[in-house]
Length: 112
Image 1 (tube, rainbow, N blue to C red):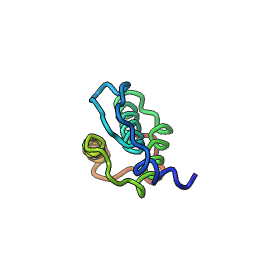
Image 2 (cartoon, rainbow, N blue to C red; image 1 turned 90 degrees about the vertical axis):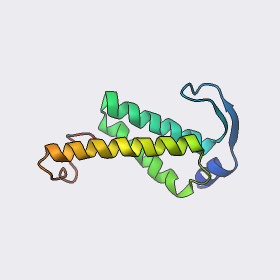
Image 3 (cartoon, rainbow, N blue to C red; image 1 turned 60 degrees about the vertical axis):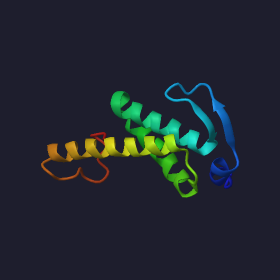
């Protein structure tokens, strides 16, 4: 559905999210909640599972949602920045281990 992305950030608001335990979320858009769930999945994957297929799919969903992100919830924006910074730090460490050169294109042997 082509209207899912724009509608999830503009029209669908959730008053209280009781199952999200990290923080008390009130009046959050469905799109922001999707972004939070994807970021939680990415963080868990990078820290414990290290599954390249799951990581690429979560990043693909974020990439597809990105043109429609407007009025993102403050906590979702904070988590997005946090995951980005931790991923950049991890990437820098991996590049330094590789002699200062980034991994070859298409190389999935080392996960972020």
